[in-house]
Amino acid sequence: MDRISTSLSHQQGISSILQQQTKVNNTQQQISLGKRIISPSDDPAGSVQLLDLSQSLSRLEQFQANNDYVVNRLSISEATLQSVTDNLQRVRELALQGFNEGNTLTDKQSLSQEMYQRLDEIIALANTKDANGDYLYAGFNTQTKPFTGTSSSGSFDYKGDQSQRFVEIGDGRTIADGNAGSEVFFNLQDASGNPEDIFSTLYALATDLAAGVAATEETTLTLAAQPSHGDEITINGAVYQFDDGSGGITGVAVTIGGDADTTTANLAAVLGANDTTVNTVQDGSQLTITANIAGNDQLSFSIPNTVTAYSATEVSIPLYDHLDQIDTGLGRVLDVRSQMGARLNVLDSQNETNLDFELSLKSTKSQIEDIDIAEAISRFNFQIVSLQAAQQAYVKVQNLSLFNLL
Picture 1 (cartoon, one colour):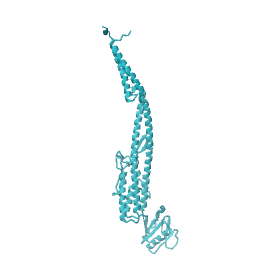
Picture 2 (cartoon, one colour):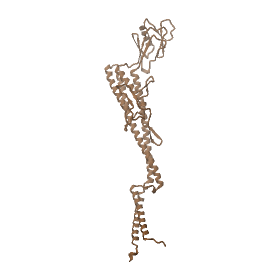
Picture 3 (cartoon, one colour):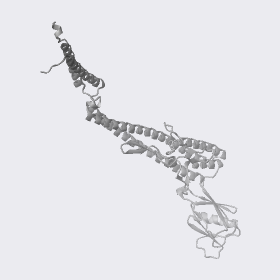
Picture 4 (cartoon, one colour):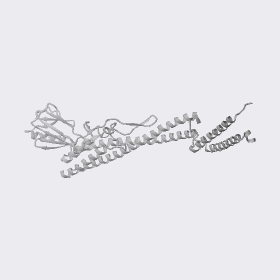
């Protein structure tokens, strides 16, 4: 028969009370927090699952933050390019208005001043920053002002790089947060295929308008001396040969007159009669050839190297070349805006996907972690009764002593 000392009985009673108090405290904490698992020991397997779910939710929160960042950046960029578009369209209107022959030089110069102001505004828009203070169109060089130059300097440069930044918005899903400024405003081509930027186009247009340069294409042909029999030029694919009447001419004959001025006049008459896309004006020894722009007809002018009796100077088309270049710039801006719109649609779709995934993760986490309140309250009440019973039993046992019978 085992003997239980008074001290051991006392310790067992205290231990029983403490155990019941621990159970009550744990259940009370579970109820107050609404969580079934307070520490890993409550459910080791469930704790591991909860850790994985928490990490997934943390990554998802970062994806959502990235998504919001890109949406904000693209929205600002799209609004900026809308303003650029409005300015380019306004400059185009001013160009058509300014090159009207009814305008005086003063009128044209007045209109050119607004063009210069629009140019400065477009440069400022191209240097726009996002909410974080990063330049929108600088590539990776987000802290470097991408575009330099003003309407006063007439010289423009791009200081950013050619890169696009890609941001992760989902597992294995990245998206560009913008376009490099070189793509949007530089790396355009003029009618001859030469590189040009939209700022230089606007500057040249305003400068030509302020100088009163004509709006039509003109080529001035000067007969410095009498050409020889058989000398030829080619205009719009037709070969014109100078003829002294001795025969042997295979192209369109141009009679050589008594002097260079007469021969020039003869060329003007033959050219005007032979090519309906060309208007000719003869002034002294100079022949001014004005091409008809309708139907995109362009004047093709070539002179064989063997011919030295005359020279030709081709003048650009101030209005139409510039307008074509503005249209190219507008097309580029609209293309970039289209790209941004597509990205915003992707971001919206990914946002919905992330939200659905987040809801699924939180639901699974809740099933593992959250407590059944009704069950917990019932268990808590039972544990309270057990604790009270342990306390009462302890009191009863402590009163069992032989000394109480003396």
